[in-house]
Image (tube, rainbow, N blue to C red; front, side, top):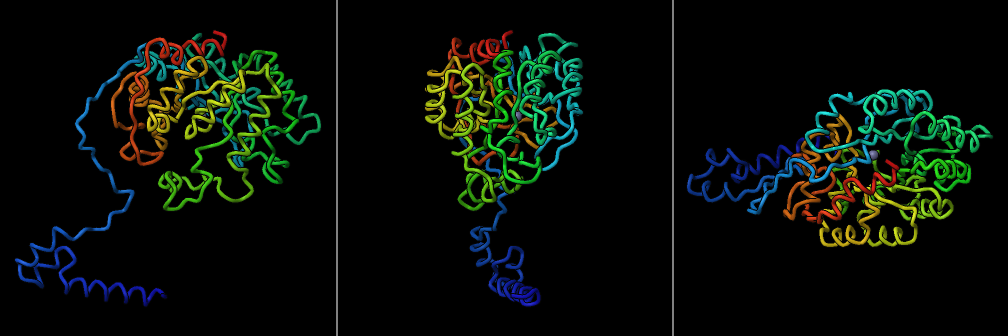
Length: 407
Ligand SMILES: [Zn+2]
């Protein structure tokens, strides 16, 4: 149908509907009032999915957990970010700061947050500056992780240089290393072009070992929700999220599958048993806790955080609770909190976000929102609390992270 035909078609259809009294407002003009009354309430209007905000009619208890029961460490936050990146690869050490220590400390005091770990501290002078601005200015309240410098990736000595960079980062005060999904999904042989570099590429072996030798845990993010690897269509349970952020899809192209990414990550953990890995976002497979559990059994050097995945954990509360029981010494509290990250309500740093995490961990409330948002941002469902006992809660909130960070 060309534009003109389409226009004509729609006018004709509208005229027909008017005559039949099927368009709201038209009925009184053309039909006897008794018939209009019978027809108008039943006529359903199409509703754009983005406009749908159903209010639950369920009457169940609502706990307000204003403050965490135990002082906690948020192992996964982003207080500083790179100022320059291209095709998913950070290319400059300079940092942009998303929140001042003072404004963060206000929320931290109210919510019982002992410390925030800023994973994206960068490298070289950007890293050193971040440590001075937060960690050194407020000892015990902020810890900064370093990131690899990928801009030198093409240098023949890269493997050695990057291992040395870890030693320098340690001297500059970094408390760990963060690997974004740059490695595995964005970094290419010519940095931003060519074939994708694999997570277990041997050029990074000296880096992993240097982290182990310096007792720097590696916080590693290698994949994404499984729905991001399937077509963005009507069967996709994260359709709205992918529709809002089409660049988050790893379906098609030359992207490896989720299985391939996790297998490469596992080979790295197997090859470097003396290095501790915090596998972020529930081991990057919160939809399959059996898989995560099996990997935790296989790799004693593996830990997980729960950042930005209470939506997944909370929709399978019984399985999640068993997972916490079994792996209570290896699960770390984290949120992915980003100051002023309003576009991503599941990780925006504010009071409400933390209250939802506390409610999930501490209450047995049913059917509540996993993010402070009008529409659930990561899929149209709600969650259930898992009501952890104090003995597990204190480990997840603080003790496990303190052990990994050697506080
Ligand atoms: Zn993150």
